[in-house]
Structure formats: structure tokens, C-alpha cells
Length: 129
Image: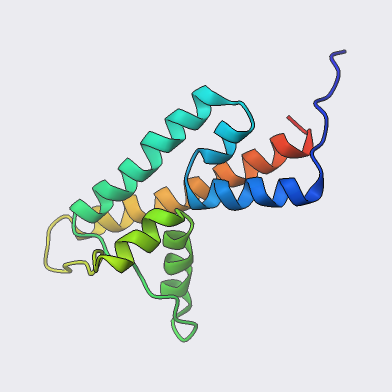
């Protein structure tokens, strides 16, 4: 049976997860998983940009509307691209656009996928993979 990878110290694991959230794929690059890291670094921000291009909306995290808040948290999962889009005033959405729902789907799924990528980087850093 092959040896399990060595677990990383907790402070380094936290830093890897923070970097992995902020820049999709960066955690995998840090951990030496270059192929996966590059794929995530290209695919997830591209997916987010397509969502914005399709007139998707970056939802507010509004606790009075639980489903909207969940969509907002999912959008936030992409990290720095979300913050950059907010800073540039992008993601206001156009409900009248025929592509609005497709755009929302791209934005939400890109954030959720990055959340899974962060969890994968966490598992690798913990020595579970």
C-alpha cells in the first residue's frame, strides 16, 4: 500500500485554502498540482466572465430573502473575480435579457465549483489525497 501524503501544518492549510478561494486554482498550484491548478485557473474565471457577459446578476447576501442570500453566497464562492466585478460595477443583471437566467446559472455554478476546488485543496493539504 502506498504511503499517504504528509499532512501540512494547520496555519499553512488555512493559507492554502484562503489563496485557493481568492484565486481559483492557486491552491492546487501551491501544492504542486500544476495541471489541475491551471485548468481551474482558466476555466472557473472564464465561466464567471461568461455569466457576466450573459447579463447575469451578482445577488446581494440579504438574510430577509433566504434564496437570494444563498445565491449571493454561491456567487461569492468564486473569490477575487467576484470582488473585482463588484468593484467595477458589473453584475447588475438585466432581467429583460433572454440570457439572464443562463448568466445567473454560470455565476452561481462557478462559485460553487470553486468552493469544491477549495475543499479539494484542503484535502490535499491535509494529506488525505
